[in-house]
Length: 411
Ligand code: AMP
Ligand code: GLY
Image (cartoon, rainbow, N blue to C red):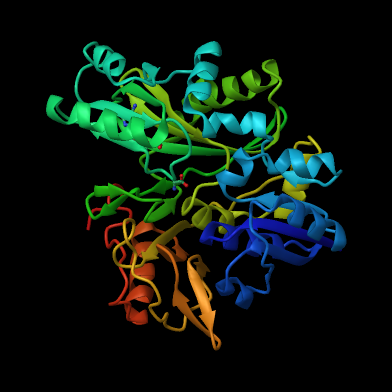
């Protein structure tokens, strides 16, 4: 029987670990550092920081872990995969060099240019005046991006002249380098792909909701809810995206000697000129994972292992139902989430994130606390089910959006 180690501590990692446990080959799943909310699912949480590579590899060896699966981007950007592989341990995720496609936005832009992958026009700057000069060539709104990992919070869409200089100044101060980009108009969607060298598996499409408030307004968050599949992203759009973006990306990775086994999550905009890349992430999305992995009918451990070994896996997703998930956050999230609110007893269909345990009871600790998910044969039914379950929990001390799915459901 196999043992799996999942790195990370959020609801996404809870979903990954729970899905691994469903595999008939797997008898033990550890999550480091994990969170106490995972224990009810039979996951062993290990108090090792996700950046303590020496501690993690020592644990993997001592416990004869067969496969490590990395959830979040920071350990990937810091080279966790290289560290494990140097010690002969199997791990699913990009090496540090490939992870730059997410961690270094300019590197990603140059990669796309080299391989003719459609994306917004841009330039990178370390100086305010040069950035202001380039901005004269763009029309408002202008997109200002901090170069580096910012948890989805390093992007500002500047609507008019008066906000431009202060935004450039603040972003430069924070990141040291910024990108100015042309604003892409259109419908945003994402495509998640599992790769193992040139082998690939396209996941069903999922739709995240990144803004804090209903109607998709307010500050950016890590993501407030998701559903899958997404009716308004048609099979033709998906095919065009695979042909014009996903496959050239996978080919480009080979040409540039950047192949890996792991995830490519392409954030796209469907513009009047066709699909364009907004950004690459080299990890699964959160909360998208919480509505994607439960749809997998094949053996998740085997699929991942096959890709690590550069074999085309046998993969099957359910095709009957819509999956729907809502993120429950602490009030004050994302700026200043209130801590230590007691959680009610939770049902089984939750993936838990920011919690701490005291005397067997869970309390909030962090911003996003848990994702509740369910499925039904129509999107509307799935939505009704999830919101009814949330209402039953009495979550008046927490915050969640009530309009997840609004683009595909007319109330
Ligand atoms: P990112 O962190 O690059 O995904 O950006 C966060 C969000 O900013 C995206 O999900 C988009 O909604 C928006 N965004 C980023 N770049 C652009 C762009 N060039 N045009 C329009 N919107 C963008
Ligand atoms: N849900 C967006 C992300 O994981 O980046």
